[in-house]
Length: 305
Image 1 (cartoon, one colour):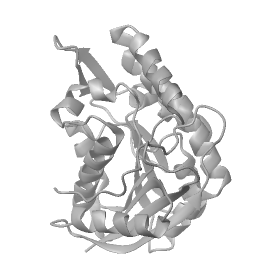
Image 2 (cartoon, one colour):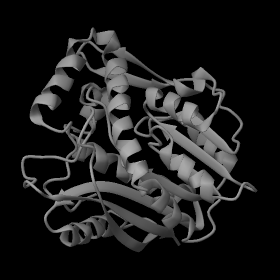
Image 3 (tube, helix red, strand yellow):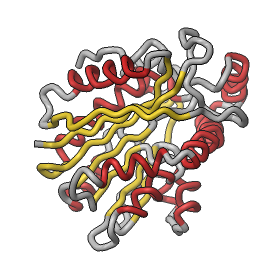
């Protein structure tokens, strides 16, 4: 579907050009059969700096409060759950009775960190369901493996790549039934993603295109899996000198993206925040971001009708 630009400066890098180049060099220096694992481990390390900094600013708590205050929310699918900060915030606010929070991520390293944060003992087979083979072209063909998924409980973590056809996971969701909310907060990806067959097939060459492709998949999933009156909650990062204009662009982008889906916008918010100044963070940056530009988290809340 056609997409309006959020802004010309919403790409996520590694803080500066030199560090971004160094990250790519480390990934491509790895032997081919270890490259994806190296890239995933690097991303998990980098994103940990961001997520902790955001947690300390209360961003996850605010987002959880925004979602839970919108209506009855007990059963949540958190896509790209990262290292579990969002799940922790949701678990604090959702009453235990009837609570079901499913956290999925394509990165096993992030999931392992989430399990540790949440105090969970998770079968490693459920954290590492995605395997790959190297094609003659050098691209990586990803596959979802494992026929036995765990019984869904209070909090469940699974290695799921939503850009892959995963009939086992889809059947598992069928058994769970309609959801109250689907969340996608701060999606990101490792630096070997562009070398996968699925990224090349979808002509994904940068972070922005990956974000848009994943959002389209999540919008379709929400239209199919949410109960009537359930919520879709998408949050992205942006930077610029006119944050209100960026918020308006963000809302316009999703007004178009939701077209032909049984979803209507409830509200669009923007929250100012700061990026980490130290460590290996994945910060909002691009050549078009002026010095001194402010950063904000833009959230879309939509309801299934």
